[in-house]
Length: 143
Image (cartoon, rainbow, N blue to C red; front, side, top):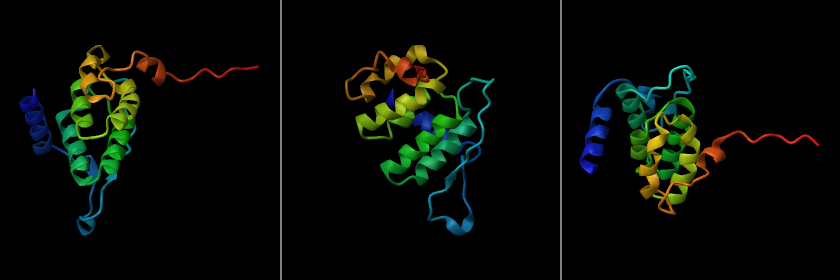
């Protein structure tokens, strides 16, 4: 499994366009994340080119906090497969941060039936039963 993940990361890094815009004069700064509006009618996982761009941004993110920011931006922009989410979450050391990020990413997962495979990355060792409920907008009560 680790070999497959490494192969996917290498493929993503070697292909396509960038997720972040970088000017030549500011190569030492973290690039800004492209905040393009997602296509809500198409729910296919991020393409190899898009993943390449995401990995470019992750490469620039030198701290865990910066990687968390990149993943949070990805959660607002792209649809992802469980495998893509797994690879992104593996870059974060803190199980608690992984769980918070999974809550952000869950509504954008294209194959939520496979979410159980992410349990090994979370503090409790399993995906919370109420994850779908956590990601639903809360109904406002009118008194």
